[in-house]
Amino acid sequence: MKKILFIHSAGDLYGSGKIMLFAIDALISTGYSCHVYLPEEGPLVKELRSKGCKVNIMELGILRRKYQNPIGLINRIFALSRAIFKIGQMIKKENFDLVYSNTTAVLCGAIATKIYGVKHLWHIHEIIESPRIFAKFLGYMIQNFSDKAIAVSTPVKRHWDQLYSHDKSVIHIIYNGLPLKDFNISKSTLRNELQLGENDVVIGMVGRVHHWKGQGYFLEIANHLRKKHDNVKFVMVGDAFPGYEYIYDELKEKKDQFSLNEVVYDLGFRKDIPNLLKGFDLFVLPSTLPDPLPTVVLEAMGMSLPVVATKHGGALEMVVNEKTGIHIPWNDAEKAAQLISPLVENQDRRLEYGRNGRVRLESEFSLPSFKNNIIQSVSDV
Image 1 (cartoon, rainbow, N blue to C red):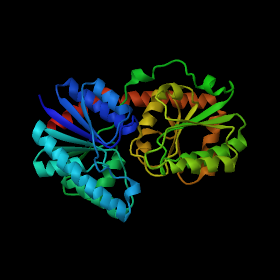
Image 2 (spheres, rainbow, N blue to C red; image 1 turned 120 degrees about the vertical axis):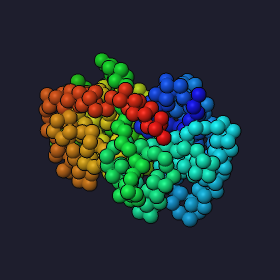
Image 3 (tube, one colour; image 1 turned 135 degrees about the vertical axis):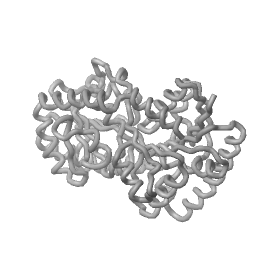
Image 4 (tube, one colour; image 1 turned 90 degrees about the horizontal axis):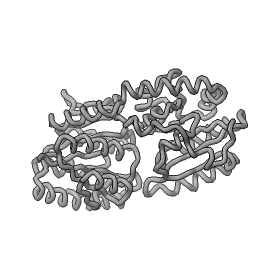
């Protein structure tokens, strides 16, 4: 039996963690044994153990923006060194055939495999543009410390290749996929929970609270839409990345500034995402930096929701403008609201875009296709 060590950057159950679960499902079904290292406890741990994975919690020297200062960098160097040593010891003890690093935030696996002579596959979910020197360093790592790398979209591959490209790129594209059965639900409890009216148009977003995920921009758009439509309500779902809890205060100030407290509902972390999406009329991805291939957009498409997405990153490959949703600017809330407004007014168009999105999900982003591609990529390393 071949053994794979997965290394992931968080214990949560958001996009990249969910995709790793699907990859592990596929590999276990073909006879692989999967071990997982995580930096923290969280809902992902229970899911992994239910699949028979061995899970270890340890400091992995994860790269976060909060460490981008002299003291923080020293902290990361020591943490990374310890993680590389421990992973190296585990590689020797368990005789892993492959180390699978999930996200560019984890460097320890890539370096340990170079030292101990084990194959390494890197699954890249991010587009990192700044600081430029750090992005170029990661590009160098991907090209020189991977036997193979998987990018979740064309913009992701293009971004890293142009940062550090050889004659032959190690990066291949595999689109994320979703299990459609999870999105075949007929009713939502959201409107009852929030005591919303029958004629209210519910506009929602789902995502970790982070400086580029666009929660603040979502509120700016909400402010403009609320001035034109008296039946719009806005729902925000998601908690903060560790170290970014201060953004809650910024969001509260913005809600107070725009007097949005009566129309904006912040639900925090929720496990029942399909249930919540079913209660939306319109889904918004307000990312202010390129989002590589946001899983939540696929989830919204799975619920037959029209998707409004900022016009960059993987959303350009996912959302067909004026067919499954619309593209909006990432830096002009008033213009974004003007583009969204016709969808607020036109239920038939919302339903049409939603149906088209579901068809596109089934044809382009199926889970069986994703799993087959992952199995093939691992076997080719």
